[in-house]
Length: 393
Image (tube, rainbow, N blue to C red):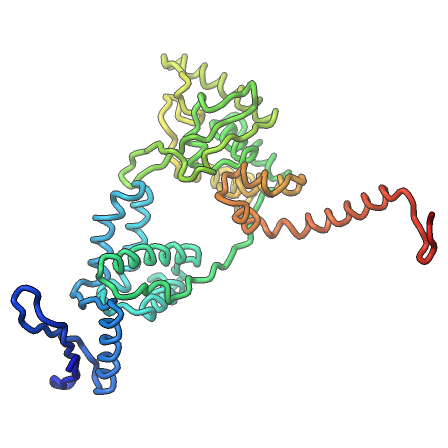
């Protein structure tokens, strides 16, 4: 007999014959938890026998999900991804372990993941205020689980891809906030004469990400030909150290055309930076960062964000983030009639689909304007109009 169910106290167990040991030739049996009732145990027996027949059976492990995630982070993620990415993985894993860490890996079910997502979206802080994670953040948690549990299957620790049986949290897109032309000039006037003016001006006029702006060197700019090259980014790690890396994707490594006003602002900034460096007894070489402290040391990413928040509030602009300067640039390009492909390339998106999805709210108004221009163009280019039913030789 290949297997049977046996009552042990108040619960039932499943016993499956696993063949003979190849060395000792002794018979091997696998004992598995069957459940509280005989029917549950019989269903478990049928499931295990089916897995054995399919070659997908995995011996139950005492390792918990939390223990596995820690091992996966240390043995795989730590050597496979960038340090900043690894730190973000640790942060996400900490949330997961807090809720599901004690679940035995072999007993992990889609319901556990679904419960985790609903718990994190609805959780509250100790003071009673909402403290749940956004749907966008939970999708990152879902992707981490898919990646980690996928390795658990490859390593023979899980029999099925549990995360694939769960739908990722649906993204609830927030209304994008962009600066109007009037707000843009008000913001720049508020920081005129400070180190923030050339940085925020460049952010609005190029759409570069914060990490790209902070990694920009003078050698990456050619103001005579009005271009800049995005070839490195700067990130700050948990320990406070700053690292310079190549952009993550091929599309992120790109050339960006500069407008005349951008070149003017950057030339003026370069002149002032050289004068200040000379006053401090320092030399400003091509390797020097475009946006940095007077002594040439990198700016802290958080300080840039805090400065933007402080200045924007001071000049009466509310509900806007530093990253919204990138959105402002993209939206203005669309309104100016720039083709989405060009917008996508300038922003360094992996594909045009990301661009269209992100800025879909801008497109309806542009489509209406395009339809009107098409109608006007067709009316002007028709050389001859004819009445219905009248033939023209």
